[in-house]
Length: 194
Image (cartoon, rainbow, N blue to C red; front, side, top):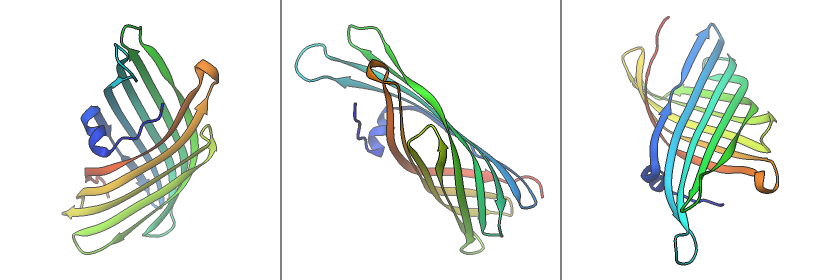
């Protein structure tokens, strides 16, 4: 089944979305844990008249654990793992639910950059790609504009883009997740420690 949905279409069927980004750093080294969870629910109709149709539920978890090194004040490199868990339940009218989905892991290499625009504004971006693991291909891009409030807090306004091509099984057990998804990112950051 192929799906092409706009951002507003996704918002219409979104039940919940949770994003957390935690970073620990010591000197030039850093560790980042970045989980993302979303739950979508939509009705569908089939071709022709009659009771063909039903409901689809998607629970999606993507979690990153990366270890990195800041080459200088503006550039960091990192390596780690990205775990995916996609649970899809298709519930056709008049039939029992059909569970689909899979979980898999990719190993990623990436780079992140940041820079100051003014006393109150800065930018940050990161790009990584799967270098090994279960996906045929996978990459991730994020760009964020930060509005600083004091010395340790800021609002984040940006965009995230994931592109993942994964396939497992065959025949009736075949699962294919060839997805590009992107959207705005709004958040608040609070830095602790010195």
